[in-house]
Image (cartoon, rainbow, N blue to C red; front, side, top):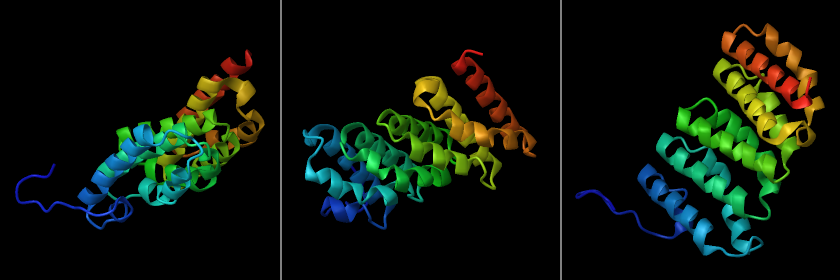
Length: 198
């Protein structure tokens, strides 16, 4: 529903997903999420692979409102598509770069997406992207990456979580100039101790 005087953006869903007007993309993202949640019954349906081609643009949308709605689309995709673990190599670095430094709601949805990727057994791609994000030049992204690692360890425990990948890099974060990064490194270390029963 558009306000009086605003143009109604119509056309095929595929065109609206890449529309230059953010309101057109927002409506398309809402429609795509609805299709994913209610319209595709089979996790192996070919439409999953058709729509997966749009995920990169959806996650990296420059409009904050569209990006948040786009993360809902990504979460639905990870939750319901059989092929979702294949997308982690492309999507996880974008989540770190474009979402973890954003608004709190965007960070929360990105964290949920990371946890869902861990749930569908795409842990190595997630951990690699988060460890790379933890060395990012923007301290906010470093701290957020470490916070997601901590949350993943807390939710899934050390048996499911590739601890050696993280432990080998952990010591370097205690020398970071930003206190937020050092705090998250401490919190992650404490979570390791709890997880390992030390």
